[in-house]
Image 1 (cartoon, helix red, strand yellow):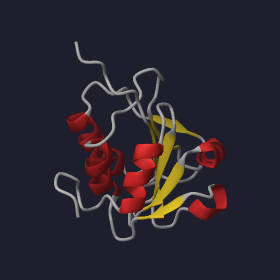
Image 2 (tube, rainbow, N blue to C red):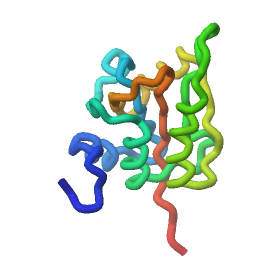
Image 3 (cartoon, rainbow, N blue to C red):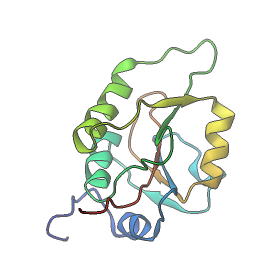
Image 4 (tube, helix red, strand yellow):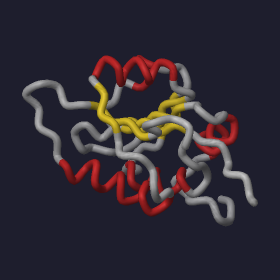
Length: 145
């Protein structure tokens, strides 16, 4: 345990966050997400919901201000309905930690999976909400003036 680092941040996740460069993407997958199918770097966070992971992660990194949409989620498959409270719970953390972050972009399922293949890592959470997956793009640490 480290002082000042949220206990939801495992040693493996801390290492990944440290090694990621700006523009690298991190997938936070729900408990049912096929992380190992799409990426060879999978970090377990079993039992931890995504808002808690976002709190811990966004205390350590910022989101990329050089891309139009540093936060991505999956569009529902035709016929499925989204629970808007899922995105709201994610955005509440994002907007508190990094105000001014552009709106979340929703991308089609196969495009989401393709981004997962290219992501730096996939974190498998304990999130059970349908469509409870999110991709974050790490930013450059802002210069102090």
